[in-house]
Amino acid sequence: MSNVTIKVCMGPGGIASGGPEVISAFETELKQADIPAEIHKGCSLHKVGCFGLCSKDVLVDLIIDGKKTTYQYVKPDMVRQIVNEHIVGGKAIHEWLVNKDYYNFYRKQIKVVLSDCGIIDYDSIDSYITGSGYKAAEKVIASMRPEDVTAIIKRSGLRGRGGAGFPTGVKWEAAGKQVSNQKYIICNADEGDPGAFMDRAVIEGNPHIVIEGMIIGAYAIGADKGYVYIRAEYPLAVERLKKALSDAKNKGFLGDKIFGSKFSFDIKIKLGAGAFVCGEETALIASIEGQRGMPRAKPPFPVYQGLWGKPTVINNVETLANVPYIVRNGAEWFSSMGTEKSKGTKVFALTGKIKNSGLIEVPMGITLREIIYEIGGGIEGGKALKAVQTGGPSGGCIPAEMLDINVDYESLAKAGSIVGSGGMIVLDEDDCMVNIAKYFLSFTQAESCGKCVPCRIGTKRLLEILERITKGEGKESDLELMESLGNDVKATSLCGLGQTAPNPILSTMKYFRHEYEAHIRDKKCPAKVCRDLITYSVIEDTCSGCGACMRACPAKAITGEKKKPHYINQELCIKCGACFDVCKFKSIKRD
Image 1 (cartoon, rainbow, N blue to C red):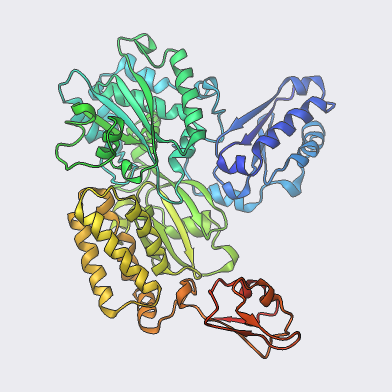
Image 2: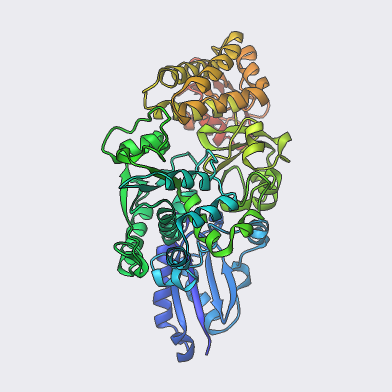
């Protein structure tokens, strides 16, 4: 009997590309097709999480008797042919199959956290259990002491994947030693970096791995209550997490005396309102307590005085998702991957001017060059790479000439950036680094809670300087002022938001100072991005007088007779670029 399994990507990329419609089409066609009974009986259709290669969605895995074939860019009107020719006829439709980009994308990846994403049905706890799900939690509760669990995590070398990289086992050990009638474990799912979607994808694709990681962590520190703090802007992740929590409770994996033991543990969801600062652990705690999400000074650290003054461990989604795999496979297995000080793998959201965008998981220590060119397939449109922004708004920009840098905590910090939670944005020759710094600083400045003066006022002054520079109103002294002020904000801010907010400025000034100087001295934006420093004019020798630019101009700044060169009135021009975009003869000059 033929066994047929169809898996359709229902991550955000898959949904946006038509995943629900593709599933509906498969359901219809499978019912209507003249499929032999033995095949139809063994045919199953599954909704799965993100496959990773979002730029090729909708991705569909077709597994027949254990042999997998993957289709890309699947649309509902393609489904009938796939069913009739491949499932029934046994012949794959080669022009719709994934190409070498797909295989190159995965070739250097090592899946740990993402190993079940795109594989299991996120809506089925049985699908997770079939693949050894909850076995690690059951093992530690049935046969291990809490301190033994912590020892395994310490030996593995797992460091927090939320940005700071603090050793997870050390944090658990400190909390475990506290004597208290109440302890908490919190999963920080408040991922808010622009361009980052790692934690969201893990919860959407395999919520049970996070739940199991929390159970193990709770047992290790002696907590009986847990919270998942997740932003309300992630409705899909919240929906799937709620379903997973309900299913786990029904199975006896959460609640009183779980797995038939004396240990009790339950998890609640706390929705965040989208404040970036609530990614900071003390601000997150304040938010759960019903207060305004603002950080407090440390020490005391949350492991000593956290939620409602009780010992509390806070780990992010990816950190907790590593835990069950470490318990299953051993500390040595995990520590064999990565570098001496940065063990294991790291999940990154690879976005920007890259051919193959998506979610990747790579061993720590891999180079940026391998990620950009071997996994990501290089830069879109054959453009030149300018820089890679790592660590989100708290990170820095690594220039193209440093592509052979290792991606780990120490190497990126030395270069003026951070690993962060895992955002990785690729920038090409058309990007203005001054404008990039302004974009990220405007984000962190808007997200500042305002509690401490260095962050509240310092980021505002820095942003004002950047805005002047991008308008052509900068002064030579601004460069020295930004450097001095940026370092002061880093050194004196209360929490990680302010302490890292100047990183985009300081790193771009370090590696792309010439772009700042061009904006200030020449009143020009080399990348032709900053609108106030751009001038549009007509190249008379090539202008055919077709009138396309004149019709496109919203400011009526272009005049001229038909079949004669046109003219742009600089006083009326709003520098929108509409004329440049519509001219087929390349007769609009942009300086």
